[in-house]
Image (cartoon, rainbow, N blue to C red; front, side, top):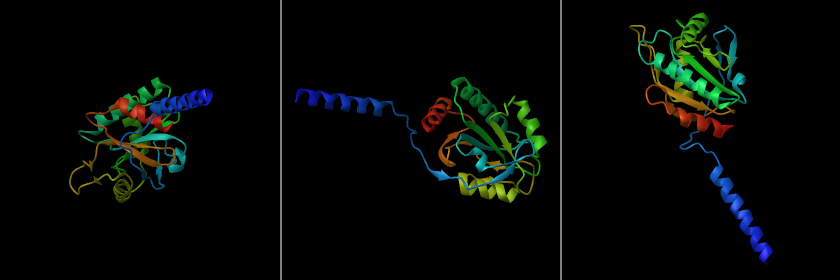
Length: 192
């Protein structure tokens, strides 16, 4: 009887300690990303299938952006370094252009090089129509993208999106001013 009681205590203690150590994503969401095909900075086809099995962070930017895109890209550059420093594997960063007629692959490459981007795990996407990216962003990321008739600036959000290995958006974060870097790293680890 005493041995049985001791065994129950050991099992319960182990379960409690294991549960306390679990990593969870707080306020997680589950928005599936529909399949897509785009062109990367190397002028090669790239789609959702290329991200299968990887955790990824995405954002929406454009290279002639006058205000929020440069800081967002700088923030992702910092995140990319943190991912490397943490030794995290199978993490990708994906930046969708919201101005695809201007942002040709070579333009995206030049833009990224200004931020010393490591292209090993960061892809810049273009090669679709303006109507496509506006619809894709809204339907999949619940993000507004709109290119007005006048001027060269595109209206878009400043969120970062954490996507799991199955292509489901699990969380959004501010990608512009108050980027929660440590929280993003924690959530990436929780998905691995």
